[in-house]
Structures are given as structure tokens and as C-alpha cells.
Amino acid sequence: MAAHIGTSMKPKSNSNNNNNNSGSNGYSSESSSGTNSNSPSPPASPPKPRLTPSLSQCRRRLRSKTHSFVRRENLGSGLNFRRNLRYLLVLPLLYISGLFMCVGPFSGLLGYASVPGSVYRSHENFRRLWDDIRFDNASALELSSVWKYKRRLKVQKPCPNLMARNHFSLYRTSMIESPGSSGYLIVDANGGLNQQRSAICNAVAVAGLLNAILVIPQFELNSVWNDPSQFGDIYDEDHFIDNLKGYVNVVRELPEALMDKYDHNMSNIPNLRVQAWAPVNYYLEVVHPILKDQGVIRIAPFANRLAMHVPPHIQLLRCVANYKALKFSLPISTLAEKLVNRMIEKSSRSGGKYVSVHLRFEQDMVAFSCCVYDGGQAEKFEMDSFREKGWKGKFKRRGLVILPALNRVEGKCPLTPVEVGLMLRGMGFDNNTSIYLASGKIYQAEKHLAPLLKMFPLLYTKESLAAPDELAPFEGYSSRLAALDYTVSLFSEVFVTTQGGNFPHFLMGHRRFLFYGHAKTIKPDKRKLVVLLQDMGISWKAFKDEMRVMLAENDRKGMMVPRVKKFNRKTSIYTYPLPECACLQHSHNSTL
Image (cartoon, rainbow, N blue to C red; front, side, top):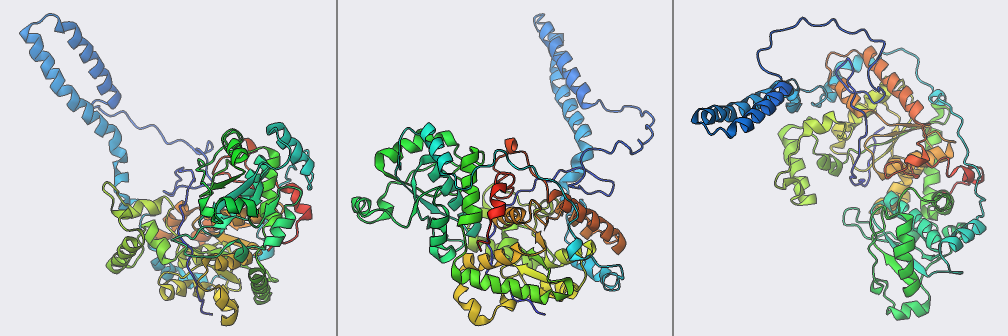
């Protein structure tokens, strides 16, 4: 079945935190840590004559000769002057030669094109291995038995009461010496669907911290996303207000008296610039006095304006907002539910279970990554033109060095459809597996999707599942389309993330919340994968063995929970909601 691809998701920065531990096959494995103590040590090499001093010897000689020069300087003899001048000329040369001697073995790293994994050859490898793949008679992986790793999660004790008004009242009274509301909080949420979601949850937490009344957040019109949707277009406002009662008071707009004060123009309210990742003390000591004095504050932009590490009762507000209060609007939730049901129906061969793949191979994502694939000069010209049009001179700044081969080696390149297909077939998913593709418009879709369709003919998208008249109201609204992808992916048995960003981070956290701690997510070790996919001599069996190991590692990591004391920007409660949000699980009703 041909896959139809819709509006593109915009590129976000991706952080790769894989350890770079060398393995015997010449690639770095995320799962390895340190050296293997059971591996035999190689025999010692016979001593070789030392032709050139080592770097440390050069440094010692430099120090000794310099001291000698200082001691003899006072003699003032012409002979010593000429001798020391000779040292001054020779020693820097020795020092530099020592540097080259020590650094020399690593200088090959500068030629990234020769490093395993630096060249895209996945399409070639697919054609070479295709017969082995389609005639592979090994037993297929059952979707119901993909996830085997289990771990007993520790529940946070004491567990805060779900209706925690008393907790928050006591907390606020102890921190802010004032009964009643401190004023009104207005925030402007910027970015795409899930960056806005982050801003909303943080706004609820800040409102609880400051004992403020939260005005329904405004959505900024982003020049990249270009989606004019407002809060009520994406989320159910009544549900949001009702489910935050007892925690934070929420209103749709400011009282008439305050609106009169600012000529009924929200932009006239002075904007308070808050530092990124601001701690609790900043809000209590700097922001709260301004709020009390003015009666209303506006913070824009509001993305990432609250630290991840906050008191437990404030952290709980983030949980309540994310998993109880935020429910997609009726038009979105109605169509999303239909798409989920249709995917279940089309997955009858696998017991109604399916795999969802968040594929970031849209043209803008490929251009932004500065990676090189197999399109030759035509691809280079097209990507250069797109970068200049989309980001002006950003990629032509003086001193900027772009190394596509290094980007690929470090796992920063978006996976192509054929790479995703090879990985999943290698892990054991067969051609009876139903796959939902959560994506925008794929770059050169006809070329790049053809191999994936060969490997997985049961491939679906929102465009192929929905009738044209059902999808028509969503066209041109990237956040609403992303909400459909989010919902269908949320209820899949396996979720595959390929490039990072807010979408997979929020989705992995939501799945951990729904599935009692397990993200049920495949996050490929791309540093390892690119090496394997470049190896034109690898057998299908050897590739499968590596993919099974990668799947098992994802199974284990799906249950990992970072220590709360190590919480920082990268260990977000939106990605790791447990144990802080565990108290909401038993009362959770689908808010989609």
C-alpha cells in the first residue's frame, strides 16, 4: 500500500549522549561501559629503539634547559649566549615533534571519510541483502512478547493526596506570607505542539508556586511552524479548567477592571523576561514581589522557564497538568480515536497490535542536519538552496565548519526509511507487522519509501487511514496534525524514535505513565547502526544478531528511572514521569 505523507514536522536540536566506547568491530556501542575484564590481554610488544624523544621527555628537556639558561644568564659570556640561543631555537622544534609523535596515531580521525560509518551506503546494502531478508524463514517476533524486561518501581512515599489543596495552601502560606491570590499570570507558549505542552505544564506549576490565577495560555505564531492555532483549537478548555480545580485557579481572560487598565490589549501588559531554567527561589524572590505590586504579570516566551528540580508538590502540578488536565479538543480526539481503531483493525494478523515510527526524514530536517546521503551533486545543490531559503546565512557564517561525515559517525543524521526497515526486520519484525508512520512529507518519498514498503507492505499514515474530508479541517495546521500522530503513536505496542526532539520525549514519558514505567520504545544506537549499515561485507545473520542485542538493550532501558537528585534539563519529568506522577496512575482516564 502506498503511503501518503502530510505536513512536515520542523527540525529540533537533538542531543546525543551515547558513550563512545570502542568495540572490537570498530564501532561504539551505547550498551558497553568500560573494558571487559574477561578479555585476554595481548602479548607485550618487544622494545623498539627510541628514535625521537617522547612528548613528556620533550617537556622535561625544555624545563631543564630553561633552568640551565636562567642559571647561566648571569655569567654574561658570549659563548653561553650563543649556546642558549641554540637551545631556544632547537627546543621548540623538539617539542613540536613530540606533539606529532604523540598525536600522530589519532590524526587519522581528522579524515572522517575513512572512519567506519561515515559514508551512507544503506541503499546498497539493502539491495545486496534483499534476497536473504525475504527468504529468511526464522520465526517472526510476536508483538505481544517484544517487551520482557520487568522491574518493580518504587512508589513515592508519602504519596500526595490527589486533591491536594491543603498541601498547596500550607506550602504557599509558608513560602509567601499572603492569604488568597497573588495576582494573575499570563504566559505565551512558543514552539510546536509539545514545546507548547511543556510551557503549559510549567505555567501551571509556576501559578501554584506563586499562588497566582492562571490565564489560559496564549500560543505564539511561530515563523517556522506557521500554525495560527490557539489553546482551544488544540485542547479542551473546560476540561483543563475543571481538572485543575483544587490545585490552580484558571480563567479564560483577565477581569474587566484589569483589561481597562491596559486598554483591552494584552500586549500592553509589561513583559517580564525570566531566565531559562529559573529556580524556585528566583520566582519567590524576584517574580512574586512584582506580581503582588502589579496584580498581573506576563512572561513571554515561556519555554523552559522553570527548573526541572522543584519541590514535590510543585512537581505534582506538572503531572496533573500533563496527564489529567490536558485533553485534546473534540475534533482532534474524535478523529484520533478513529485512526487508532482503524490501525487496530488493520493489525488483525498481530492481534490488533502495531508498531509506530516517528520518522524525521522531511526535507527541512535533512537540510538542517547537514548530512549527506546518496543523491550526489543534485542533492547537495537542493539542500544548499533549501538551507539558504529557510535559514538565510546561518550555515554560511564565517568560521563555521560543516562535517557531514562526522555528523553521521556521531549519530546525528536522520535515519532514512530503508534504515528503519532494515533495523526492524533485523530485530525480528516480519512483513505481517502493521506500521504506522508518524511523519511529515518525506524527502523524495517515492525513492526512499519504496524499500520500506517492500519490507513492510502493511504501512499506514494518517493520510491513508483517514478519508480526505475527515482530514481536510486539519490541513495547514501542523500542531493539529501532530496531535493525531501523537495519539496513534501513544497506543502502539512499539514506538520507534529516530531523531529526538520534544515529540518523542513527551511520548516516551506518556507511555511510561500509561504502561506502568515501561516506555515500550526503540531508540536506536545510531552510532552503532551507521557502522553496520556501511559494512558491505556483513551477513544478514550477523546484522540480525546485532539488532537483537540492540532490541534487548532498549527493553532494559525502557524501564530505567534516573535518580531524582540528578534531575536536570536532560532528565525531564516529561520524559521520566515516575515516581513523581505514579500517584495519578490509578485514577487516570484517557485525556486524549
